Amino acid sequence: MINVMRVLFILTFVFYGCNKEENDNISILPNVPPLKAYSCDSDSIPISINAKNALMESGMSNCMMPFGVLISADKNMPILYLEMAGKILAEMLDQDLDGFMDDSSLFKYISKWESAWLAMPTDYNKWETQQLPILSNRLGYDIIIPSWWMGTIASQPNKRAIAVMVEEITHFLTQFGYSPRYPEKFGVDDWSSVIAKETRNAQCVWWQHPENECPNSPAQINGDCSQPNCDVVEFYHQVLIIRAGMEPGWLGINFPSTSAELEDVLSEEITELMDDQKYHQLKTPLTFSYPLEN
Image (cartoon, rainbow, N blue to C red; front, side):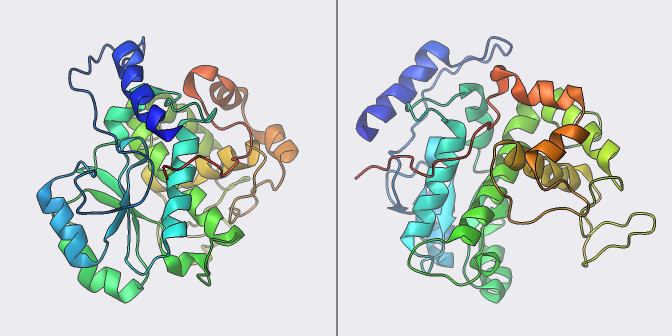
């Protein structure tokens, strides 16, 4: 099936490569490898030699590229964890598992590994002092899915590990896919988009990121998530996951814990946006069963 998927994906761009609202002609068909784990220096991974060398030198040596998104894992991260991240990302982009991206117009944004990519490191000190200095000048902004957020690393990812993967992949797709593609709807660079206004309206009422201050409710942990490219991204992840019938790894302060409670406080504007089939927002739980290449 997956051998066919690559052909289907290319045909998607031949026939449907542009969203009707965006006249972006794709003159060069993307080279998207079949969905499986590779050594990051493989010829199947279509990134620059400099980027490959940086990944291999730093020990971030296993890669996947679901629909063109670069995911790289430390050599000590079990391959099943990398494969699960790849399956989650692929399913979020292709929810009916037919081998086509549901919204192919996102491709040109999410496939820019020079702008952003997903990293799966396993050692905090090594990542900060050795790996990141090598990688930061040769790849884009890193959204991390680290082992130290997942708890105990077993042979297969558990519920906590999967929740971390879902969250960080949702962050990536929101910030580097939907935000630049649909800035008026999903933008996170300022407070003007639909999801940003929803976040601001919920702040200190039924949403508070634990790093942020509210009147009579001090921050609970060190940090600062007050800017829209953090606060909106974190807020929207929880809205999306709960509305889809799933359980996020954590809840913001005062955030509704059930979909029914959440629907009561969401505005009509955001629910209509999320229910609009044009945007392919997650509406049902992920199956975590996207097929991999053998």
